[in-house]
Length: 537
Image (tube, rainbow, N blue to C red; front, top):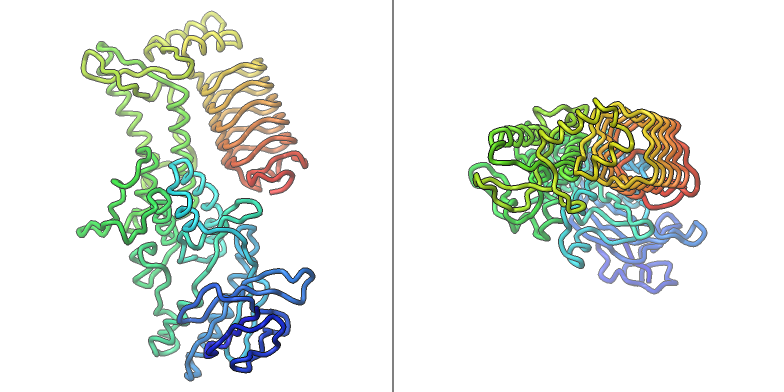
């Protein structure tokens, strides 16, 4: 079928072989190359069409967006043209990212403007939630870890998307990666121009872009900032967690805040991240995508601590336990505050253990805590630290000592001098080596899943075929480390030094690492990149 793009056509559907519209006589071929197959969407500004490019081999699909300012006012038309050209220039710039549709062409025809973009085959997140139900907390965290770097890239190009929502996020069928579509500035700007009939200068500034419920107050008041995209992303997260439109959620009449907490079940640290993303006041909201990424690193760090360390309070230690718990909660809480946290590094390693409840009351009315892993009860923190001190004095803080300590329930070996440590094939999931010195250490074939290597020096370490899935390696020094065949799925590698690291055959699927970091390392066609594809990003 060929489709007529004339907005006044009474019957736009035509047979495949038709050259002109049978109803209105308009040409059915745009620019002598684009055959319109059907309409994808329509509004007051114009329409979006599915199209074939007949000039290229295979006649690939593309998307044509038609902008039609229905006015005889020459000033309005001139402004529409300027905005159209500016939008085309913007799309051409941001379209260099692999998860943003490329701008293929733009032109004017019959006083109507056309943008031709890459066609993204897949389903948007609105459709995905409708079909499969709400996301889990882990699913939303993965969503954010993928989308935030794209938003950060867009903002670096001095562009505010202004319409982030589930319907504008497509999961590409070919590689399952998310793609941001519909940079909707032009359609709304021009639509506002036509509606307002104001002067050109006023028309240029007086417009609001966005979808009600997803756009923050300052954006609806026509003053969008980069943090406006962060708010819309936060609302998108709430939709993914609840499958409920923001219009279906109540609003605090005194503050204007969306009342979403009762509809979700997420950890306290992650709830604080979402709350900060959704602050009504820009002053208290995250200002950038990198700030949100940093906060997510903090949640990963606190999760790592909870998995790797533990305390068993006793009645005699109630006061010290309460003090420790208060200090830990204070540090984690501070990490998620955009105004008080350290913006350049994760929280300092804690040589005491966060609490992991098993709902067992102690005689003093508190809660008992024990290590779930290996079903082994762990000594109180003071006794564990005494054990480590004795091990040092006896010179046993070596490979054998660490294995023996781990079997006794000790997980915390942070800030230790362990250069040259030899632990091949060791089974140490959840161990904490935060900020330790492990230059030249041998962990070949070991199980170090969920381990904490934050800020650890692992230069020249042997990590061949090592299980490092979900390990925390932010700020770690992995220069010239041998990671051939290692499993780094879901690992946190933000800000890690990978200069000269051997990643040939390494599995980096869903790992948090940038192309710039990987460019410093050695990779080959067997390396599984974060996208899940081998050999290329």
